[in-house]
Length: 429
Image (cartoon, rainbow, N blue to C red):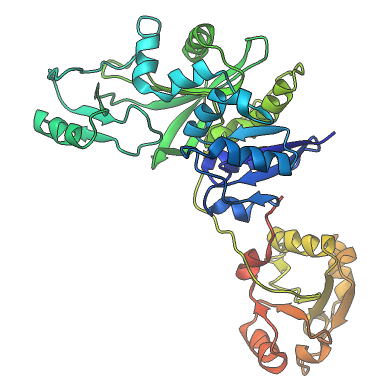
């Protein structure tokens, strides 16, 4: 059975990680939901836009309509505000929610509530309240309710504190923690058992997102996780963050009962938090077994395209296009198999035999790619490739500018160099 799961909002870093974790699962049919157009429309095959804003008066009514129309079984929240909103209104929704109880979500959504709740149990930052003047600087300011590094400031005077407090009275005035930062990815099953708690170092952070991270093994992380798990009721995936103070002591930054975008690190060690959470929400018993090898994850912006182009055939070159530096270009093969899946004819158009004297079929056999092509055409050195392109609704791919220019000029069809194949790939699942 496939369970129909709506990820909302699907274009967040959280929503994109849920997509990566679940897109190839045979147990799940994914739907991506968004209030406004975002990156989710480029990666979710089943994409739904114009869901009411989570803070609007008609949010529950609007999302229920979408849930019913698409026969959704579960919502997987992908933003802290949505996590809390859905947990608080679970009895009003027409499907189940993957996540922790409302009380847990409420405490975790507020930094001050989190610190007050765990004070005396684990180390939390000192909060300067009611105009209390800090004894030393710098001081760290951050919103009581927020995520990432948005709205945070490092200040060095009382005047700066007062300046930012006038802009946002709810901003917290906290001790500054100068040390390294860590995230501990956790999973708690339906019985309240903490099955997994492993740390990763946030080695490089951009806009509050960990963009370079790697696993760290220290027993203290599991010990702190167990204290948190004993005090709060979690269901499925969650994480918390720690930072070292001036004395090297681990101090709590935040707890979040949701997926984190950089959980991809542990997913690539064998821990698929999103899928585990789905099975746990179905009241199934789950087991965790992870691989043990060194791994570093680095994240950066990547490109996705929406291209308006219809074609029935692809004509593609071999040397320096499919084969580059005596190796198969895997991105080209990715695209060609996409063409096969979509019923698009793939034709090889090459001067390899004319230039080298070698049978092109022998080369294809040596690289184990001979069965991909619907047609293999040997082009002589004195011939133009355009004479072999008979389908007017086709595209041409070649590393050579002169070859592309001639074909484009004579046939008026789109031509692509190797680096622009990325715009032809459909990443939607």
